[in-house]
Length: 342
Ligand SMILES: C[S@@+](CC[C@H](N)C(=O)[O-])C[C@H]1O[C@@H](n2cnc3c(N)ncnc32)[C@H](O)[C@@H]1O
Image 1 (cartoon, protein in one colour):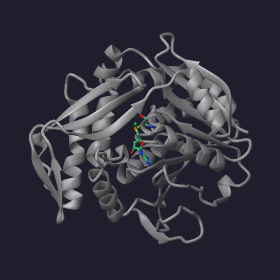
Image 2 (cartoon, protein in one colour; image 1 turned 120 degrees about the horizontal axis):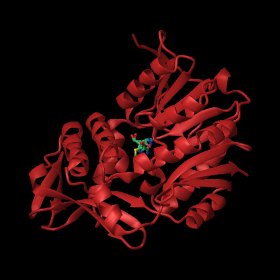
Image 3 (cartoon, protein in one colour; image 1 turned 90 degrees about the vertical axis):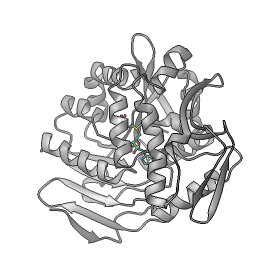
C-alpha cells in the first residue's frame, strides 16, 4: 500500500508541488515533484518551434522509455554500462571507504543497478537518495532495492535535476556528509553551459566538504561510438521513436513514427548527435499548433558529449569542485571521477 500525504515543509524545489508518498511497509519514501504535463507541452512546443527542432532527452524516459533504456544497457555495442560497472567493481572498496558514514545521493538513478555494487562493498550504508524524472520507474527501482538491502532507507525524489534542488529536511540527513553519484555518462546529455550550471547546483547541494562521483564517457573513435548509439537490433531507434508515441499520448499530437528514421552521428566537436529524420515533407499538430517538417529535416532528441579526462576536470574545477582522483578501465573507454566540493 502506498500512502500520499501533503507535505509543505520538507522539500524546496522551485515551481513544484509539495507532495510526498511513502510506503509504510517498506523503507521507501517518495517525494513526487514530477513536472506537470503543461510544462512538458510548453517545452515540446518551444523545442519544435526552433529552427533546429529539438526536444530535451529528459522526456525520453516515460515507463516504456525507461524499459528500452534498460534494454540498451544490455546490448553488446553499448560498452558504457558494462565498462562503468567493471570500474565500479574494481574500485568498490576504495569508493566505500571514501563514502564513510555519509549519505549517498544518486542523480538520474534509473534502475538503481550501479548503486548495488557500492552497497555490496558497503553493507552498512543507511541512507540512499535516488533522484529521477521517471516517476514509476524510480519508485519500483527503490522498492526492489530495499527488498534486497533491508537495512537501507531509500528516499526517492521524482524531480528534474536541471532545476535548482534542495534535499528534504529529514533527520537522517542532518549534519551528514553527502556524496553525490551521477553514473551512466548522463553528464554528457547536458550542453556545455547546462553541464556547468548543473555541476554548480550540485556543488551547492552537496555543500562544503561534500563529494561527487561522476561517470564520464571518454572521447574515442566513431567506429566504437556510432554503433553504441545506433545498435544493430534497433533498440536505440525504438527508444528515440518512443518519444513521438509519448508526445502523441500525453499531448494529443499526431506524429506518425513511420515518417521518421533514427540516426546517430559522431560530430568531431566531441558529441554524438541523435535525431529523428523526417522521411518526407509533413505537418504535425499539437492542439492547434502546426509544425512543418521538410524532407530530411532533423528533430534532435539527444546529444551525448564526450570528454578527455583533463577537459572534464577543468569543467568540474570551474564549477567549484577539486578533482581528487579518476578511475578508468584498461582500454580507457570510460572514466569515473571523484571530486570534492571546495
Ligand atoms: C542515461 S540514464 C542513466 C541511468 C542510470 N544512472 C545508469 O547509469 O544506468 C539517465 C537517467 O536519468 C534520468 N533523467 C534524465 N534526465 C533527467 C532530469 N533532467 N532530471 C532527473 N532525471 C533525469 C532518466 O529518467 C534516466 O533514468
